[in-house]
Amino acid sequence: MSRRIIIVTAVHAPSAHFLADAYKSLLDQELPEGWEWHWLIQEDGKTDQVAPHVPDDERVSFRQGRPGGPGVARTIALAHADGEYVKILDADDQLAPGALARDLAVLEADPSIGWTTSRVLDFLPDGSTVGFPGDPGAGPIERQEVVEYWASHDYRAQVHPATLFVRRDLLLALGGWMALPASEDTGLLLALNSVARGWFSSEVGLLYRKWEGQVTGQAAHVDAAERDARMAVVEARARALNHFEWRYPNSQS
Image: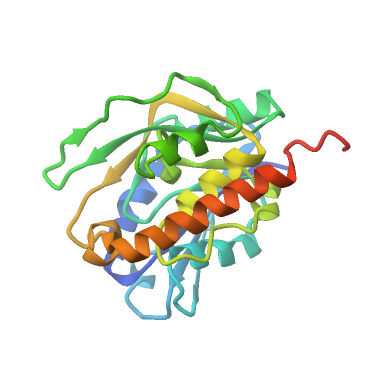
């Protein structure tokens, strides 16, 4: 029986037409023998505008639910995550070739690593891509490294939460994504870094689409009062997890 990687995607109507590109990037992935992927697409809402864009593939499941933001959609999708690992793929993004195999190889080789991230390229409307200076070195990310960097660099992490590949049990233990209107994926990244070692791949793992309908490009996303509140609760959870000294893997297991 094949072992399974679960791809989790939250989608809303404005981004649904990008699902075809995300699907193609999944089809281009090559996995080791005995492994397969299953794609869980969860609509953030109940409209008739997303389903027509969902690929007709037995490896793809589509569900809907009441709107609550992408973090809620991803977390509710975990009810159907029956694989050992979970990979995040936003509806408007694309995986780079080899991304899944590289993520999988790291976690299969080292049980002390709980999650991985990888290099990102912005994917611009004209089809060009832009990278960023300052990526960390390839290899392990020790506990608290991301938290401390983020806190001292205007709440910007050195690795991208949209590239997370994580052990399902660890993701469930942390409650999935934070119940925030935005930055829910950053909250998860910092929580993971508080309790478990991670890994950064310097090979490109994701094309991060930039487009006018992008949620992070809207004025509400940079509202100062809300941003301060989001960052405060994200940091407080990460610090509390570290304070209570819950660790992955559990040394008592």
